Image 1: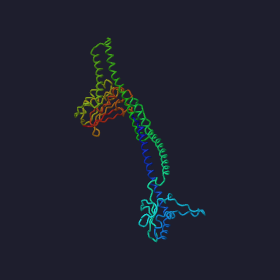
Image 2: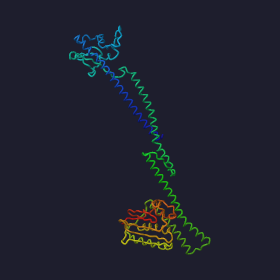
Image 3: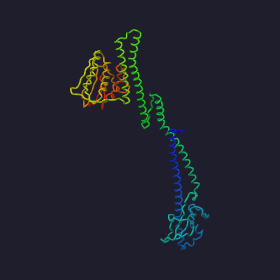
Image 4: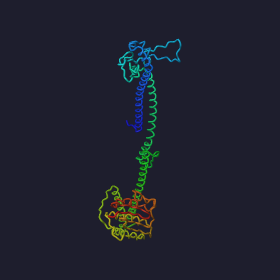
Length: 453
């Protein structure tokens, strides 16, 4: 049978309280027995105090203890307490003291050598003896045999009363412990149950699940961490869907063009000539490039990209890349500018991957920069790092979206990032294959930066 954590916590708290109650009960019972016996024995010792002077007077008068030996009448006469004069009734004799009342039953008279003369023949401990002195000389001892148990002292009824009272307090304490254990289990575990329920909803795909945070302890921190996790999953799911929509859009465009041109050729609207073949080949090439980009991103995602790192001349690499875009920039009436440092720029990297990254950035700039604008590529040394800047004259990206341009699946809401820009830019870190690449984005500039080799 599966036990919930609430039941376990309830049982643990209740068992702890029960253990404390049991230990306290046993300790109180033991302490009561010892204290009660000590009280009775102390009372017996106090009762011997007024007897000592009477025994001393009797010994001084008789000269020995022979008058007391086996003489119960004289013994009880000496042991009989003196009546209070204020309450004495004229004409009535003082009632005799029974040998079963008070401490007479356990008191004994010993001679100077501690031999029994009269009284209770028990074991006599020095701790419970008082000397009988005559003229400064010890002539005998008055001893009392201490009680060893409550039943022996005749206190069973009192002990039972105390036991019943302790039992009643124990039952009340147990009921209180049950209430406290239930309250603790509920108070501590209710937030955990809420987190567990929200986790089940999250596992079912309800990424909007959140948990109310009502404390600053470990449970509250757990709730905050869960909310952060849910927020991250919800954001990633949203970006994943947007990414899939972007990929579908990117693939649909060349496919639609291919389908339209093929249907036109099939219907005889267009002839299958060299121009048609070139148009179809261009659409297939664009489609192939999109598929290759997706494949590269999937390799980067699993860390399976291969690199061929060499010492490469960055100025030569950027020159070749910009020359590839000169014709397209001219067709869109864009001015393409390349600014290089006067000193050599060398990095240890995969030139193919660097070309892929810079080409993707230039592709975005050429595609979305307004006609008559400028696209500029710069490369220079800054603080022992090679800095490559790709800039255009806009329209730029919303400043609020700039920090997220390099996040996985992220796509801005503006038309500038509607196409492949977003998901192409995301893989920049894996594509560069540099020791410690960094990137920064600003409107209207996107800058990947690479450490010098």
